[in-house]
Image 1 (cartoon, one colour):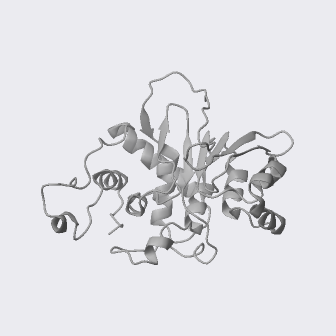
Image 2 (tube, rainbow, N blue to C red; image 1 turned 90 degrees about the vertical axis):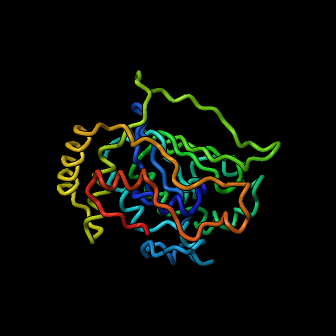
Length: 268
């Protein structure tokens, strides 16, 4: 779940992301870490990144969580970096502590996990919640209310011999075509949050943005732009000193999407 920081920064969705749907399977993710001091701040990191920037760029911000909180349509799969705070209450915590005894103090203090991830799981109620941050396998079933849906939570171990880092799960979907397509609701949320300065919830504005997106996608089509090379590949025939870029390359996919949505490129 830890992407290259430049790739993370280059997404107009910026961390909290649900840009595509695959058939009827709607994935959603927040791949950043929770650090309380940086949570209320904006995304201030700029190229070239300093040592502090290369750490803080991975920290989840209130803005990211706020965007995901506006999703109304059902979420099939949610991916995150951090465990949701309190998730150990819904699984076999005794077995977890047998394998990871150093978790006990954090569990008792109520600090093991990310409070924002907890809030997102409670709001979005995804069918599945996957991650691998704490390097141990742990499963849980979270019942949302007395008659609400259930979230199947699964954390996996580090990818090493003998570890439980892989599990195959079959998830049903409707018949094809099996293609990626832009998620209309998420693009509307993206437009609304990039064109408004406040973090308030205004669903009328989102509906207006959604009508705009729907018109755009009906004209252009909902299939994502064709993937193209973003930057030159490594050339082993050149001197090593000439293989390090002096600047950065804009992602053509991001530029095309922002142009479609009528948004300025803001990631330099």
